Each structure stands twice: as C-alpha cells, then as structure tokens.
Image (tube, rainbow, N blue to C red):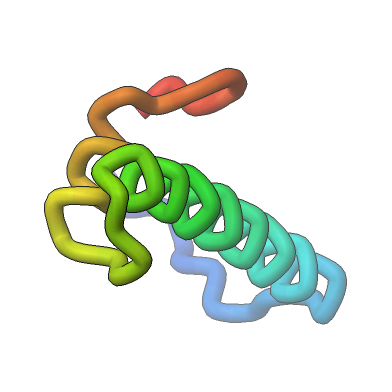
Amino acid sequence: MLAPPQINRWTAEALVALQEAAEDYLVGLFSDSMLCAIHARRVTLMRKDFELARRLGGKGRPW
C-alpha cells in the first residue's frame, strides 16, 4: 500500500487565514486573561490567569 503524497505548498491566502485565526485566538485569550487578573484586583497578567481563561473557555471555543 502506497502512502499518499505529501503536500508541501501553502497558498498565500491559506497562510493569511492561518495567521488571522491565530491572532484572533491570542487576542481573545489575552482579553479573557486580563479580565481574570482584573477580577483578582491585579494589573499584571500571571500564568494562572491564562490557565483560568483557557479552562473557562467561552463562546465558540470548544477547547
């Protein structure tokens, strides 16, 4: 049985879409993490803020 050929090329549009999705995820994560820090009466983001934000998830975030 032969393995399917690997695709090693990406279109510019695919890379832009991937970058947009990654940026959108990170902006949302930072926003949610900042809300966690503010709730704890802090202005400094800490690792536990990111962990809580990821754990709580949110609308449209199945992970």
